[in-house]
Each structure stands twice: as C-alpha cells, then as structure tokens.
Amino acid sequence: MKVNINDREEFDYVVKQGYNPLMNSVFIIDHQLRIDIQRELFGRSFLSKGNVKQGNQRFYQWVWQKRGPVRHCEECGTPLNSYSSAFVSHILSRKGYPEMAHDPRNINILCSKHHWQWENDPRSMRIFPKNQETITMLKHEYHFRPRHVSV
Image (cartoon, rainbow, N blue to C red; front, side, top):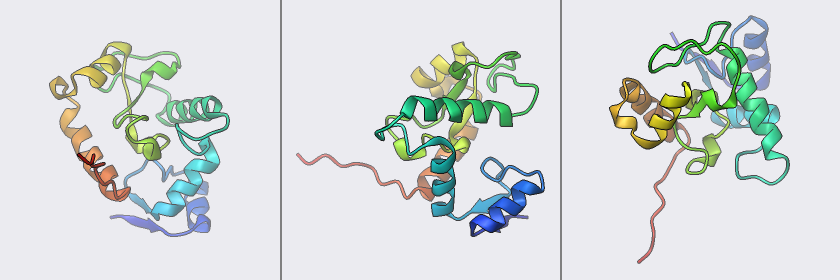
C-alpha cells in the first residue's frame, strides 16, 4: 500500500508518527514538496551558490543517521562502524544530476572500495540491478531529459 503526501502538514504528521517519508518508498511525496523539504534541510544543491559544503555535510550525516544503528556496505556487507562522508555514495552523480544531489533515495552506503567501484565499474556490482530501478524512478520523477548537444 502506498501513502500519498501532498502537503507539509501531512509530511509533518507522518514524521511525528516515527516514519521517514524522504527515504521510505511506501510514501509518495508531491515532487515540489520533496524538493522544498530537501532544500530546507540541506540547502539548494551541489552546484548552487552559498555554503554548499556545509549543506552536503548535513546531508551525508543525516543519511548516515537515518540508515540506523548498524551500517554495512550495501555491496559486500563489511561493517562500517564510524561515520565518514566517503561511505555515502551517490547512485546518480552530484555533478551530472545536481537536482538529485540531496535526495536520500539517490544514495548507497558503500565501503571505500565499492564507492570507487560504483564510480568506475558499476555494471560489475551486485547492487547494479537495484540501482538501475532507482535510477529509472528518479529520472522519471525529476522529469529528466537527456541533454542534447547541437552539432
């Protein structure tokens, strides 16, 4: 069963009930509302002016905390016992998709080895099929249109 969240009041109610609608796929959040809340929590985006570094750190720490008390690499299962922003890996890159940079659904928790592998050889990874589903969903929701270069 999916639950639609159409305004801030509904979002706040769900959060007060102990849910995390930004990360939980049971909740379908109005797209503009999601963008507004992400900007409120973490800043505008990877490419915006202002203090981007602080916003990114807030985002990484928020994702790390919301993933629960026990964290493991999603590829190999190695325990990740202490926080490092290096363990927070974007599925779609911040540079290529800045509008999705602070969307928690665009994140894997990966050890350093597999973070590097995701950026360089993602098709060889066990998490690739699941991430392809996430990529399709995010691109659809953000109405991503490939950039065409005029010749």
